[in-house]
Every structure is written in structure tokens, then in C-alpha cells.
Length: 154
Length: 233
Image (tube, each protein chain N blue to C red):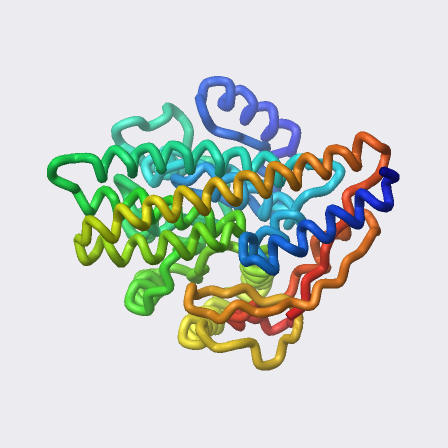
């Protein structure tokens, strides 16, 4: 596949992530912060996000597994996850966290369990999608091309 | 005092201090102290500020911030009054000391109270915003922080230096207006907006693709749906 084709594929793929609501405008903001002096900025932030999220998801699983659930602590973890997903533009995880927090407030165990599953699924989804995105970018760079930037208008 | 002397003495101090990213204080460049317990947010705010030509020191807690400013009694750094900081930008929700508590400590300190403090929060709670502004915060940014937010703050910061305190009142009002209007769609601006609340309907964007290399940051530097606009916009 030649570079132009790869670039088009990348843009189509990125576009689809926005259409599906997996990513939002904040992700584009991050891309705008990347340049020659900081060519891996987005990948670095996303890596931090993955590490952070996995830790929080583990903490959440443990916290909801206790005989007596500390809903304040659960809420605190979800709040953090919501914050970081919002900061990278992971819209669906963020929205799932909002629902999760509502159940925490109601101290609804089943609701929380269900939300945890939902958040985990959304996390896996965005992780896969972003890893695919980065792979596509790397292929373009390896082939000597540059990564095209998207512009989004509403 | 020459700049080179200042730089030399700062480098000596920086060898003794662990965990701080010190850069020589430069009277021309704005030095911002960023406080956030989140790794992700710290990295993002650091980059946003750097790309806006600010020098950044990023710390992970209010306590560390106070140490850096030379205000923490328990772990005071000998002979170190704190590097010149032009702006403090802090997250609100942090374990230990909240951003609000940090704000109070700074405003209660005769040495530090003149430093403008901006609060960031993922939660758009009017009472919280009001309280922060009333207790001395310069501005309140609802996360996620964007380049336009940083630009706006930097703009009035440098304007403040020239005009004195006149700029501040205006921005406090703007922050209040922006939170009142946070759920309304942009009226004037037709470029990119971000959903600040989860209930906003999913929009079908018309996406223009470009095969050109990375465009400069300023192309996306447009006001968002929160209508936080500076006078210069």
C-alpha cells in the first residue's frame, strides 16, 4: 500500500471513531499539541491513560468485591477515571463513568456492577481502536510519509 | 543582577531539590506552577502551557506546590524563598489538600497572595466556581482544558502586567457567564465545539480531511461552547 492510500485509510478510520462517539474533540486538541519537537505526545498521553485506567479498573473491581462496599471510594475512583478519559477525549468511557457515579450516589450495587462491566468494555474498545490508530500512523511514518491532521467542524 | 548570575545560582539549588523540574527564572517568559494529582492531566497541562510559551513546573499535590513556593513550614528548603512564579493553575479535586485549600493558603500568605491562581475542575458546579472566585481565584476552567483556555489566561496575565488589576474583574464576570451558558450551543462561533455535558446530543460532524502535515496549534485555537472569550477574540 502506498503512502497516500495509507493516509486516506487513517483519516477514514479516525473519522469513524468520531462518528461512533469513541473519541471527541479533546482528542483532536491533543493532536494539535503534537509537532516535530514532540512527535509522540499523543501516544505518550494515551499510554499514561492506559496505565492509569487499568489501575483504576483493578481498584474498582476490588472495591466492588468487598462484603461491605465503600461507595465513596468507588465514586472517587470513577471520578478519576472520568477525568482522565475526558482529558484524552475518550467520550464513551467518560459517559459510562457519569452513569456509574449516579449509581454510586444511590448506593446501588447492581447498578454499579453493571456499570463496571460497561466501563471495562468501553475501555477495551477505545484501547483497541487507539492501538490500531497508532499502528497505522507508525506504518505511514515507516513508509516515509507524514501523519495527516484532521480538521473537525460542526 | 545579571541573568547569568541568576541562572548559575538556580542550577546549584536545583541539584539539591528532588522531583522538581526547575528552569531558570526568566523575566520575559511567564512561569506557571501547575498542580494536578492526575498523571494524564499533568502531562496535558504541561504541554498546553509549554506550547503557549510558558515555563512550566508541574507538581502532583498542594503540599508540593507550597514547598516549591517556599511556604511549607515542615519541609522548608534552606535559603530558598521559592522561584518567581507568575501564575498558579491548580486542579480542584485532589487528595490531601484540595485546590481550594491551596488557594486559601496562597491568598493568606503576604508573600504569595499577589500570584494569580486559576482553578480547574471537571465539575461545573456554580457554587464551587463562585466560592473560588470570591476567595481570590483569578479564573475557573472547566476541564478538559483546551489550548484556547490557556491562551485566554496567558493573554490577560500579560495584559494584567501592563494594565494593573483592571483586567481581573472582567474575567471573573466572564467565568460566571460561561458557566451559566455552559449547556447552550455556541451562538456566534461555528467552528469546533466540545460537549461539556454528557447529555449533549451526539452531533454529526462534517469532517474535512487533509493530507497536509500537522497544522500549527493556532488553527484549533477557537472558542468552545462555553463561550469563554477574551476581549481580543
